[in-house]
Figure 1: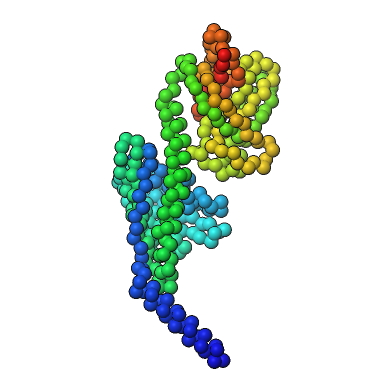
Figure 2: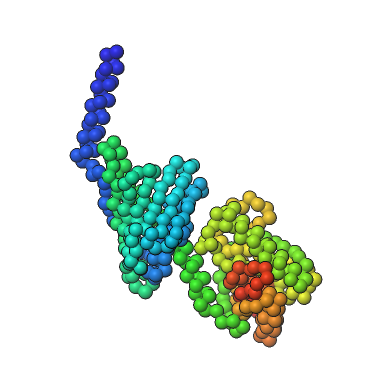
Length: 346
C-alpha cells in the first residue's frame, strides 16, 4: 500500500510539473510562416489553390491517403467554397472553408480538424517573381490547445512544412502537365504538315486486334480507351493531371487491311506495379516525326495519313508506325481531334 501511495504522489507531482512547464513555457497556439517558389505564372498557380477540387488533387494531406472520402460544396471555387473529409482508416475528419479571396493575390482558409471547435487559420499570399515564377507564402495560426495537449505544438510546424514540401512536388507535376497540354492546344495548326522531334514516352495500355469495318473500328477504339482510362484513373488512382493524352500506335498503312492491330495507351511518368495482365507498358523511343493535326470524322483521318506517307516517300525516308494522339478523348458519335505522327528515318 505504501508503494502505491508513493507512486500516486509521484504521478501527481510529475503531472503537475508537466502541466506547469506546458503552461509557462509553451504557447497555447502557434504562429509560423512557410515560403516557397514555383516556376509557373501566378494565375496558373492561384487556380490550383482557390478551386478545392484542384487543391485536393495535389495537396499531400489528401493524396497520401487511399481511404480519404471528400465531399465538395458549392460554389466549388473561391470565397464560400468548402469541403468535408472523413478518413476512417486513419481515424480523422474535418472541414475546410475558403473565407476570403483576392484574385491571384490572397486566400484565407479555415480548417476544422477532428471536431475541434477552434479552426486552424491559413492565409496564403501569391506574389509574381517574374512572368513564369510565383512566390507562395503560408501564414499559419494554430488553434489554442489545452495544457495537456500543448506538447503537440512542438511538431506542428515541422509536420506542416513537410506536408508543403511533398505537396509542392505534386503541384509542380500537376502544373507541368496542365501547361504542356495548354501549350500544345494553343500551338495547333490543322492540316499543315510539320516535322517534330519527339522525346521518349512510357505508355500503359492494351493490345487489340479488330475488324476494320465502317464505324466498327472507331467504336472498338472508344471502348478500349474507356477500359484503359478507367483502369488508370480508378484502379491506379491517377488524376487527369497526372497523365498525358491517349496514344494509339499502329502500322502506318494498315487502314487498307481487313483487320487492324493496334496498341492504345496512356502516358505515365514511371513504371508502377500492374496486377491486371490485360494491361502492359510499352516504351516509345525518341524519333523524328512527320506530323499533321486533324479534326473531323475518324474515317477522314486516312487522307491525312496518306499525306504523311507521300511526304516520307518523296523525301526518300523510311517510315515506321503511325501514332494517333487524341487531343480530345474519343467519344462514340463525335468527331475526333487528332495529332497524327509518322516516325521517319533514313
